[in-house]
Length: 427
Image 1 (cartoon, rainbow, N blue to C red):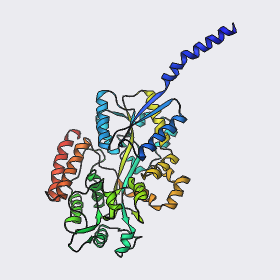
Image 2 (image 1 turned 90 degrees about the vertical axis):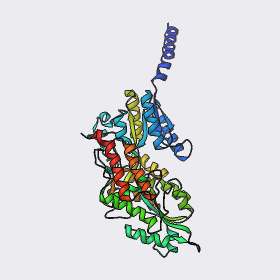
Image 3 (image 1 turned 60 degrees about the horizontal axis):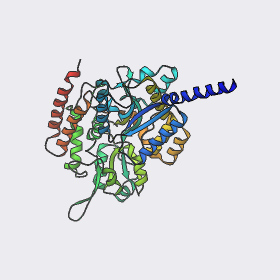
Image 4 (image 1 turned 90 degrees about the horizontal axis):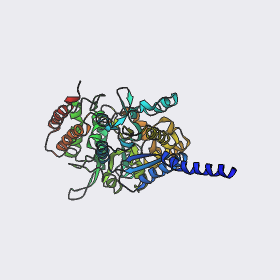
């Protein structure tokens, strides 16, 4: 009798094993980076650590290329009926994802007071590009602002105080004039400054526009202000850096090569993402500084970077598992370590209060610059039909920087095209 009972228990357990195996929830996860490199190792490590703590969940990162490639792949997957469960995509992709009916709001899953406290714990500046219509659609993760990197050794050689970066547009030009060097033939051997104009030209330009006193769009994503006088003034300043002041390369400056130009001392000051901070820290063979961007009429930078999104075509179990991972990944200590490892801004004040981040900032003060700039930061350019509305601006910027149109004409044409694209979304 006892043996028969044991046999029955064994048979029952054997029958349940496939059911337990099937019960594991797989969470596919689009992540915007090419395969390989340090970031993928960090993400793979996070997935593995989470799975150890949550054996019923399998997190499967899929490295989907650049941000632009990732949104294209995500939308293609949505249309084919096989989207990921979650993705890191640009915060500015929010309206596009909503219009494509691709994602679900986190608000629908945040039921407890603890859930509400968690979502309210992020920096308000990062939440501007994460919510609309009274709902939270994205959770900040790898977020950034634009900061100024400068070579302190070249400052000393030019007779500038290495501990006092330029504070205003006027000072920025004056510093750049002292930092620009030419050989006997007049050829530039070292530029005073560079603002990249490929890759994300609208983003770098938005900082100038905010500093001139005008953000580029409304909160509803239905209007842009490309042709406002302050915006034209900002573009004229950028053009004049190369054309008039001769302290900045004329034409298009490559996003991807700007850090290398800085490392190789081809340029003394550069504007780029705080996401490059760890890269600069590891590769600059000289003493460098990091500062908030100089002010025009005011200080300012757009926020940038990626949010977590949850896709609609997923099971309730997958969404719950994905939400659990997202909450786990954004815990203060983990957000702090992510910021240290990558250079992105830790996304909550609580992350900056952790012992690991306090210790890091005490030993490496530049890590706090992007955080300190957040009170001056504005939402990154984001509208309905965002890719094409942004392209209209990028085309205008390129025309002005290459000299084929005046700043005023370039922005007037960009505004006309953006208004045409946004007309269907105005109610």
